[in-house]
Image (cartoon, rainbow, N blue to C red; front, side, top):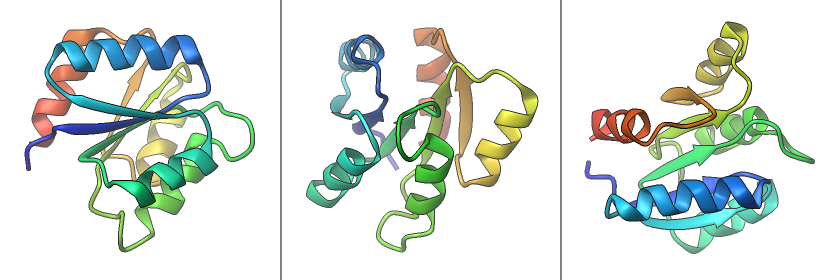
Length: 121
């Protein structure tokens, strides 16, 4: 599968802008959502090839949202990379157990993120 369309879910406008610009410079199409409800609306409008998911968000957190997305048949095939400031090993393990395919900590380095995306293809 070729990754072309990415949905970024993060409550930080600064992080959304940073990640969006990074991915666009690498030729990807980007949509964003600032919370779980908006993320689910974006998924219903157009399925992405990849979701970058923050963990710490108001309301439903990224772990909960990842679990709910990966358990829905319409969306279970979409890989999710957790992209968060939570850098403990227990957080990484928990994220992967919720259905994430990979886990990366902030601050994100473009080369590292793009390599992780390439390995999903």
